[in-house]
Image: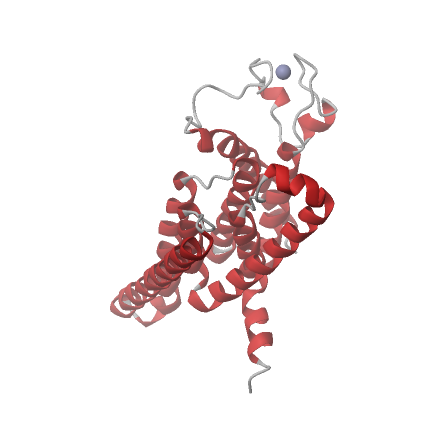
Length: 277
Ligand SMILES: [Zn+2]
């Protein structure tokens, strides 16, 4: 039934993933995503169009650069495949409509931010701030479409109201995290939550609302803490002392929890609230 839509979503997702790979490599270093054209990060040889086909080229080249034969990072095919899977998932979940496309963009940018923070401990403003703006815009357009059958005045009113609600959710989340950041620095005398994390959380709240943001935050803290414990257990106590405190990319866990809640945030919140009849 939806075969053409799924094939199109798959191809679109692969292309979007390929583009986001460029963003992940360049935005944390404040480089242009347009110039210079795609090149091997190791030997700087320009990558020909035939070697730049998402996933296919990686498989044909067996994961090595055509020029210097050094390994291409696994991150490239991973991001392409994951964004393609998220795109198909959203089109199946929400349908080939505004919601499906909007949530595809949300999930894809969140994945890019998760990888950025894991690789560089940075969440570029050039990804978080547009995501925040798009979240408010999406909430407004969703309100407009939902009430358009009742006439233009109703539709504009609904768009303004929902857009405003998205902005308030984002502002409240940012304030709460800034307060937590301040308290953490008072107690621990070092920064635990970066300003990038604050902007990322505000963007997720604009999209999903303040209530689902609570679920996102809870999941991010739990999965982040469990991962940190696992890493510390593997590293051992001796190396932990010599290497200093473990730096956990909290933005990675926030972004991954955001992707989870983009699909299952509503049912998870309902399940949790069912314990308090
Ligand atoms: Zn090379």
